Image 1 (cartoon, one colour):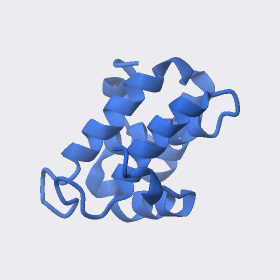
Image 2 (tube, rainbow, N blue to C red):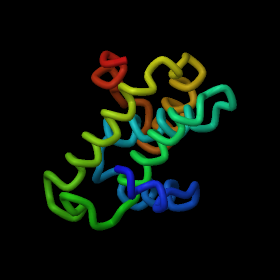
Image 3 (tube, helix red, strand yellow):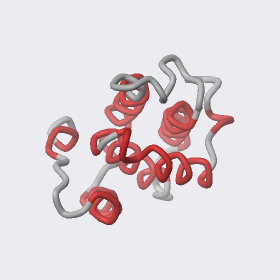
Length: 122
């Protein structure tokens, strides 16, 4: 992920989620949102922010290890990269971060979203 930071920007992040959010699924989107909202916290150390930016940069890449257009498996590598970053910065994920991510997820997918799989890993 060391080369993926240059691909991260806030605009590219939101564009990717809007374009592929439904296809990527709740877990990928929720994980990306958690990382995004942790990145916004001013008290998070620079090293943790670099981990997040690297993972979100990889997520944004259109041509990563498994192309996102690959039906059924296109986002598995993205989820893996996001998941590794999530575990590395989990100590900075508080209830406020979760609430913001869940609110955005609910806005996009409706009330029927299940975040328990990701929340269970935190």
